[in-house]
Every structure is written in structure tokens, then in C-alpha cells.
Length: 276
Ligand SMILES: [Zn+2]
Image (cartoon, rainbow, N blue to C red; front, side, top):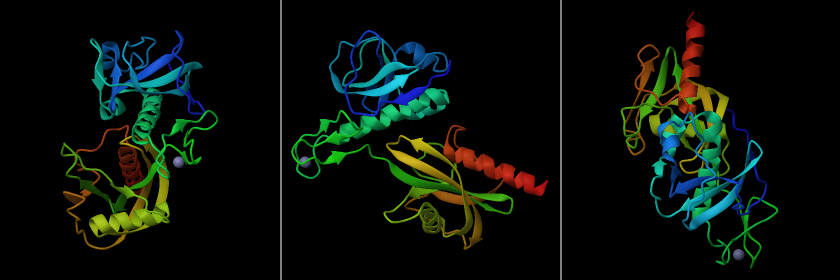
């Protein structure tokens, strides 16, 4: 079954009607019935089951296949329900299902950090004609926070520059990435990040793909680029290690659902087509 998700254009609480579907969260984890946790490709994580628990936060997300869907965050784990981390959801669910979880998780995080007006301190309120929170005292509007980041794979001959970060729990190597600074283009941010983290200059940055990344609210802009100069000097505050890997001897890579892996796979395919 394919799920078509459409955003609701305003900030309102979801109606608790018998038809409404609900996607539950417990803190930053998805909360679902065991059938979803055990077979996330067979069952959706949203449900018509209503929890007899007070919602910490809730809002109408939109519709899934034309049925209203709301997000509700609760503070306690109800008996018989189980949680799944967002990273596990990313790997375990189909793209159309993760798209909904991704949107819900980012809005949940935003709501959990935006209670008061940052200009005057009054309590923010839902806005019924805009997806925003509005201050009733001064009119300031707070919109969902999205932080643009660049991520890039650098190609040199038949090798790729990949890095291992100390905050990865596994031996996985990935692309270099970083936040875009105010006033900076994505291409400038990529060149700066690669130079800062690895001492390498790049050229011919080509945009390839983007991905909403709910950890907690990044938008990853993915680039392929080429080595232009420099020697590998690792910024050990950011990275544990980094190296050039031949495309036939790649280390452990990120999951196929990630933008990093899509970039690495595209770079490998490009190198193979160049040398064949
Ligand atoms: Zn205000």
C-alpha cells in the first residue's frame, strides 16, 4: 500500500474523531503498537486507537490517503505499546511512511522547544491560517525550524574521501557535512567544511540530491565534487579519522536510505563509468 501524505496548511490541534488517525510519540521516539514495531513494512505506525493518556503536545499534521492524521506526544509509555527511535524508523520503514514520521518528528521537536515568544516572552499560540505559532501580545510568528546543511563526497581519481566521526557508534565512514552559515551559499559552505575538517580544497561541486533529516531539523543538500588540492589534515574536534578509499575497497558505509549513501553510490557509479 502506498501512503500519500498532504500537509495541513495551518497550526491546529487534530480532532479526536473516530476517523482520525494518530501518530504517537513518547519524547523523541515513535510510539506504536507491537505489530508495527515487529513488521514495520507491513503495518503503518499511525492508528485509530485512542490512548487514555493526556497529550503533552498535539497538532493536525495533514492527511494520509485523504484521512486526517494528527501527531500526539504523550509523557508515559502505555502498557502494550512499544517505542522505536527515529534512526531505526529511517532504516526500517518504507520511504512514504518515513516521510510522515520525518515531518511529525520535526514538528514535535519544534513545538517542544517553542513555548514562549523570543521577542516578548508571552505564551505562543497556534495559528489557524498559517503553519506557525503566533505571539498574542506582539504578533511575532515562529515558523518550524529547518537548518540547511551541506554534505559532499570528494572524488580523487578512483578514490573517495570518507570520514569516521567519533559520534558514530559503529565503524561507519561517511561523507563530510556541516551547517551552512548565515550569508553563505551551499557551494561556499561545502568548500569551507571540507577545507576545515580535512584540509582539502575542492572544485566542480555538483548538486545531486537533498533529504529532510530529522536529527533534529536539518535539510541536507547533497553534492558530488572533485579534489582540487591540499594534503589530508584531520580536524580531530570534528572527526576521528578520514581517508581516501578506493571504490573497490570501501569501508562500512551508511544505510541505503541516507543521502550520504546515495552520494557515495552515485560517485562510485560515475567513477566506474569513467574507467570502463
Ligand atoms: Zn511576543
